[in-house]
Amino acid sequence: MNDIVQIIRDVVSGVLMISGSILALLASLGLFRLATTRARMHATTKPATLGVLLCGVGAALQMASTSDVTKVVVIIVLQLVTAPIGAHMLSRAVGGK
Amino acid sequence: MTVVAYVSLSLLALAAVVGVVSIAKRSHLGDRAVAFDMLTSVVTCGLLVGAGVWQEVLNLDLAVVLGLLGFVASLTIARFVESQVEQE
Image 1 (cartoon, each protein chain N blue to C red):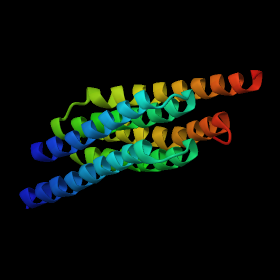
Image 2 (image 1 turned 135 degrees about the vertical axis):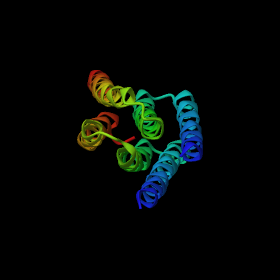
Image 3 (image 1 turned 120 degrees about the vertical axis):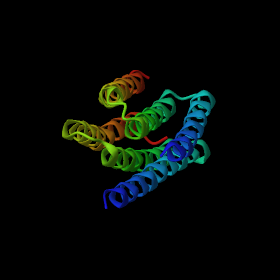
Image 4 (image 1 turned 180 degrees about the vertical axis):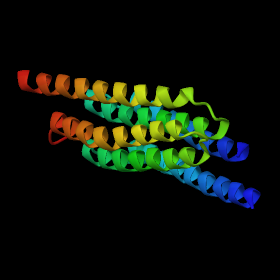
């Protein structure tokens, strides 16, 4: 029974980690391809935040102790709070470009 | 799990290479700040994957520091670009 739980946990966290990495790759391709600064910002902030979230949940599933899971939650919350603020400041700075 | 780590870390490495190339390609400082912001979150993803697969607990502290540092850096660059635009 324990083996089955471990296998399910491994599969779920592997799928989450790989999909987070694919999102990060898509964000960087959008950064490379799109024409204006605001379009690039749109392409990078959302997938990058979701990618960190998915990788974090995948890592938290593998953690043994509660304090490590708490650290992962802190990282995810930090990313969720700071990414919109940074993107807002940058978009105000670049203006209409 | 090691196979998952290799696949996911190689995808992230590809993303980081594309990010560095686009930092080098763009000329405007705001564009570079956007690319730098994305690069920070790619590195954070890599640290989290490493922490999950190999039980490297130190990586989590590094990811917290990196998140805060990237936030402060992009805010500083944004304020600088804004002040430059006002002076012109």
